[in-house]
Image 1 (tube, rainbow, N blue to C red):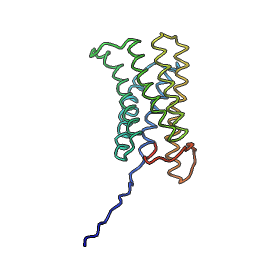
Image 2 (image 1 turned 90 degrees about the horizontal axis):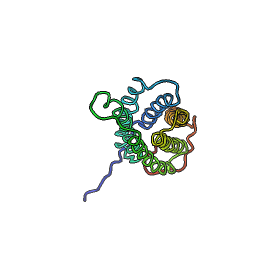
Image 3 (image 1 turned 90 degrees about the vertical axis):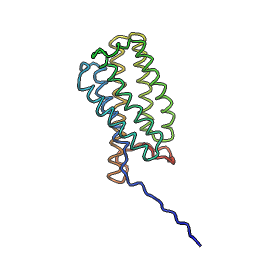
Image 4 (image 1 turned 120 degrees about the horizontal axis):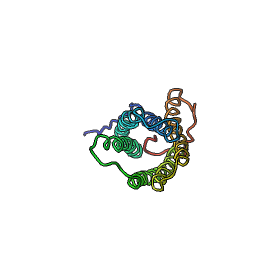
Amino acid sequence: MNESTSTQIKDTTANPAPLGLLGFGMTTVLLNLHNAGFYELNGMILAMGICYGGIAQVIAGIMEWKKGNTFATTAFISYGFFWLSLVALIVLPKLNLAAAADEKAMSAYLSLWGLFTAVMFLGTFRLNRALQVVFGSLTLLFFLLAIGDYTGAGADFKHLTGYEGLVCGLAAIYTGLAQVLNELYGKTVLPLGMVKKTPAAAI
């Protein structure tokens, strides 16, 4: 008589969420310091958009896919390629490889990202309060940017939008670092405001 046996495999890989959150958050802060009027758009922002906001987030999303986390996979890979596409929108016209997007085109681009983020925001109500702040403020940021482009709003509106973007970026940085410190110390060092546990690993 054959006895069936089962082997349970324990996931011992690291949590990739802090990488994705920090890649997003730090790049968002630097871009929105520009939007708030602290400095001009420059190569530093573009480099962060390619390397940390873009590539690092895509890597984090692939790692989340390996963990079976659909929400985090979708979020990190999508926003990673958002940053890469944003850099492409700036660089391609300068290389004479494409026509520059006008204000209405940019408004459509940002509005669609705002709609995507709004739906992802609904998912954070199964996760934690910190992520609700990140996705809620990001939804608002995308729509403010879209309104600014569509209406041709002046510098004051753009600066206001930049400050709102700083809130979003800093919230993402906080959430990522909180996960790192909480795991290292084995206790809540920086609270995330957990809502409820879900079958999938929460970012």
